[in-house]
Structures are given as C-alpha cells and as structure tokens.
Image (cartoon, rainbow, N blue to C red):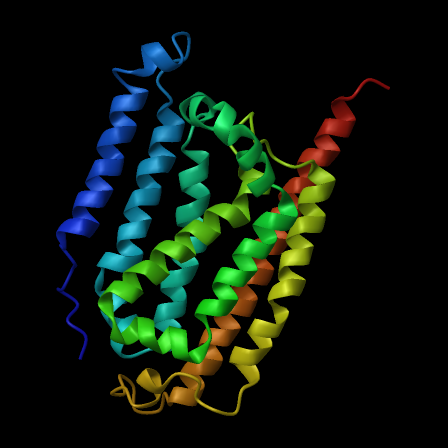
Amino acid sequence: MIDWRHWHNEPFLIGGLIFLGWLYAILTGPLRSRLAPAAPYPVASAIRFYTALFIFYLAVGSPLDQAGERYLFSAHMLQHQLLVYPAAILFLLGLPAWLIDPVLDHPGLRGLARGLSHPLICGLVYTAVIGVWHMPALYDWALRDKLAHVFEHLMFFGAGLFYWWPQLSPSRVAPRSSHAVQMLYQFGVVIAMTPLFAYLTFSTDILYPTYEYAPRLFADFSPGNDQLLAGVMMKIGSLLVGATAIGVSFYHWFQHNERAPG
C-alpha cells in the first residue's frame, strides 16, 4: 500500500530545487543591479517561479510518485500533466526577459535559440518526447530503473518548456509567436498527439507490465480501467489546456486589433 507519509528527500532532488531557488534569488536580488539596473524586484514573477518549483516537487517528490511508480498508470499520468502544464507554464512566466536574454543573445546562441523556438520545432520536440517515452519498452524501463525515471521526468518537464515557448516565451531574443500562429500551433499539437491518445485509450491490451501485475489499490479498479482512465486524462487534459490556450490567444489578438488605430 502507498505510504502517504513518504516524501522524497533525495539530495539531487531537494538540492537541485534549492539551488534553482537560490540562483533565482541571487540573480533577481543582489545581481539585478548589473543585469537590469532600472528594473524593480519582479514580485509576481518570483511567486510564479517558486510556485513552479513547488509543483515540480509535488509531482515527483510527494507520495504521488510512489503511486505512479508502483501502482497506477493514471497516477503517473497525473505526474506528467503537473510537469508539462502548471510547472512548465509557471516556470516560464517566472523568468523576466532581462534574466535570460543576456544568455540567449550571446552571438553563439542567438541563432540556435531562435531556431529551436520556432513553433514547428517546439511542437515536434514535444510530441516526439511524449510519444517516444510512452513506448511500452521505454515506459516500463523507467518504472523499473530509478535513474531512467528521473531522466524521463526531466525530459517531460523540458518538453513542457518547449511546448509552451511559442505562446509564453519571456524572451525578446526568441519571442512569442503571433497570436494567429499560437492558435494554429495549439490546434496542431492536439492533432499530432491524437494517435497517442487513441493508442492509450482504446488498446485492448495492457501496455505496461508493471501496471498489469501491480497490487490493486481498489478492488474494482482493474489494470484496463486504470489504462483507460490514464488515456482519458491525457486526452481531456490536452483538449482543455489547448482550448484554453487558443482562447487566451484569441482574446489577446482581439484586444490588440481593438487598440490598433483605425
């Protein structure tokens, strides 16, 4: 059974999150006068950034990790959705442009940053990472190997940053796409992910042996039901998030056109 009192305290996890929080505090605090002398302390951005770190820890450090690793595919799916949606969104929204542009504007990185931030590249990276990791051999390997599981979660979070960059980029060097492109981009990602949704939701076989033979937490909740729930969570979550993102882009597009001189 799940030990709901077990929270991960591995040095790499806790130390990594603390290091990121410390680095952000130093760069936006004492070093802000060098990076952006006229900029005030970014209170709202800092709240978003530290909330992203907290959600990241909830996803991979709380008892949810044990539930997803040993018992329920649907719990593992929830972990991934936390990493790709709120954690990645808040992380990007927590980065002021003056904090990352000095790095991205380096002559050796400027072209690469602009190339990698193209919506087509971002969409391909996101769908490829999510799709490849859901291959049965790789997915089950991650469940059996702790290091592979850590790598999987880092790649999901990184893929989430790629996914949201065209719409939420904090950078002036590799800026957000136009509102029209953002809407087409979100629609395209949903279409590209549909085969994976269908694969998980409608498969008549249990795709991952770990969950097929895992102890049942609930008597009437079979591995098939668990897999169906995970597929529905991925599909519905993607549709809701994509539709919301399209709605936000449309709203900003409309507002921009309303403010434009006639």
